[in-house]
Image 1 (cartoon, rainbow, N blue to C red):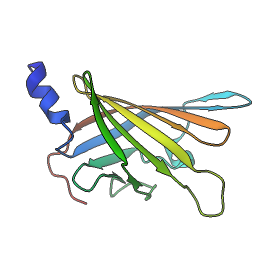
Image 2 (cartoon, rainbow, N blue to C red):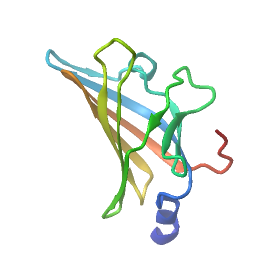
Image 3 (cartoon, rainbow, N blue to C red):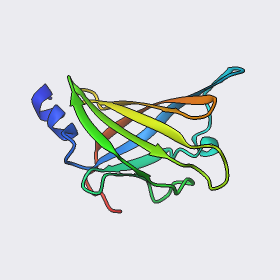
Length: 133
């Protein structure tokens, strides 16, 4: 498929469906590879709703938390989304996050950092044909 046609799917206007392939956790003591998304509160499958500026878990996800997208930017052949989340009430687990989506391949890298911990999430996004909230 030509780059221009494929890149148009990642213009920040059409909803996207994403999936998590791998998560790495980095904390002050060690690096943990292949972390279970459910344990760290990241849905395995998610939707990016540009109209509402929200990241939403799929309806079958064990994780039900949504995240507000605070900033959308286009840099080179990448679509960048950024936000912050407070996490669970009364627990110091809030994070700032950034998602980079390749407009060429749909590959995703999410980085999130909080108090003494960081996560790097690798995944893939595709256009969401039948997106429903």
